[in-house]
Image (spheres, rainbow, N blue to C red):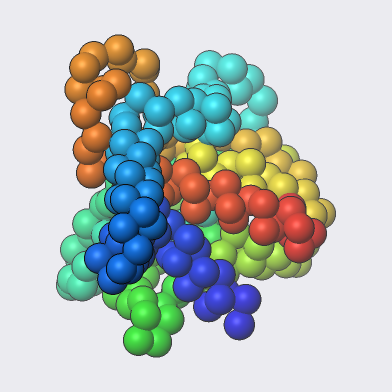
Length: 260
C-alpha cells in the first residue's frame, strides 16, 4: 500500500500537475483578482522550474560528488547496483537489450570490475508495475545481468535480487541476500544515481549494511552563464526539476518514517 500511495502522491505534488491545476483554476474562477494572481503564480512556477541555471544549481547542491576510480585503492567484495532506468521499458526478444538514461549505474561498476576493484556485482530491483497506473515491460535486473555477462563479467560473479520495488526494499532484500551468503564478503560499494545516493546509503545503513557510495548518472553539469541558461525556460529543465523535487520529497518522507 505504501508503494502505491507514494507513487500516486509524488505525481500529484510535482510541478506539472500543480501548474495545470493552477491554470484550470484560473480559467474557472470568476474572481478577477484571484485569476490574475493564479496566472502570475503560474508564470513564476514555469520560470523557476524551467530555468536551466536554477535547476542545475539545485542538483549541484543535492547530488553526492563524483568518486574517481583512481581514488579506490582497496578491493571491494560486492558492488551493489540499484536498478531504475538502466534498461528501456521496451518489449523485445530475449537477445535484445535497449539501454536507457541511467545506464551509467552499471557502466561504472563494470569499469571497476574490469580494473580488479570489484569481486562480484549484485543487481537489486524487481518488477515495479502498478495495475492501471504503471507497466514494467522489461526485466531490468535480468537484462542488466545479461549485458554485464556479455561485456565480460563472469556469470558466477553476478548476484541477483529481484523482489525490491523501491529504495527501502532494495536495502532490506539485499541485506537478506548478503547475510545468507557470508562468503560474499563484507566490503560493499553502492552504485546509484548521484541525486539518489543520500537516500540509498541511509536505507542500507538502517538495514545494517554499511556501504561506501559511488555516484553515477549525474544530472548536474558545469555552470553556464548564457542567456539561454539564465533566462529562457525549457521543458528539459522542467523534467529535471521534477526528478529533483521527487527525490528531495522522497528523502524527507523516508526520514520521517525512519527508513533512512
